[in-house]
Length: 286
Image 1 (tube, rainbow, N blue to C red):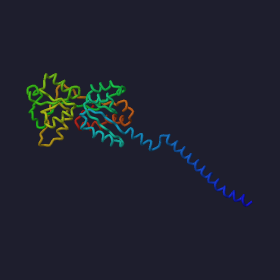
Image 2: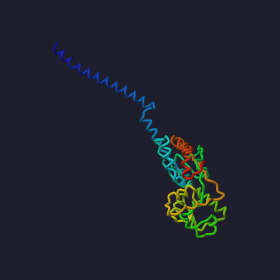
Image 3: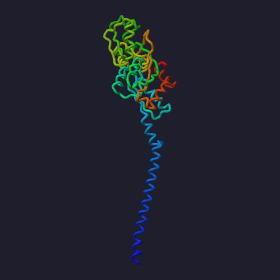
Image 4: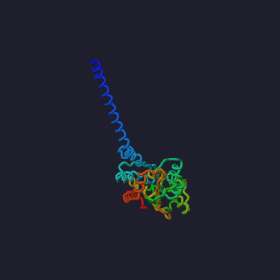
């Protein structure tokens, strides 16, 4: 009798331990199911943050003439209700940008300095469903190096002074297409001009005094003058007759159309705030 009771007193605590372990397992299982249901609902803060981070990065392929204003546009967009947005710029001549995208470079948004290169871009699969919108305008001018070392007084000097050193963009780049169009119509043949890949390169030549003058946009001439010291003199500009202002169309790529922040940035570029910033750098309204 005593042995039988002793046997049971040993087994009962073991059974109780097993029951407790099973109960704990059931509680953990139920908790896991609840968490799984919450995760699948899409309301998890971590999940939402990850989605937001994926959409926050925007890569913009932009004409080189937008380089001076790009950072300010991006900062204003972030401050204007898009605190997580990250705008990355790739600047080059518009024709070069079209080539890069055609070769597989990833972009969300393309801003061309003319409508001709946007038309070329729309032949690519990346822009098959694109709907370009003009966000700014610009004007080609002939700008002298600081202090006007070539003593230019008018565009007629290009015909008479064969020693003038002139820089212009390569043909096919918007600033080059316009410059060549004017020179052809005016019957001007430049003596050994220097041709550059984009307007920023021409502006650099003009600023450094490597040439007497260059065909650049009015926005670039304004930026050059702003960055000069008083003792460096003035950048003189001459309007080009018969040349219409450039229109800057912007369009989302196929990938950009799936990027919420890229869509919002394009919409924002049409706002009064964006136009005001662009106007401060000399760009005209669309």
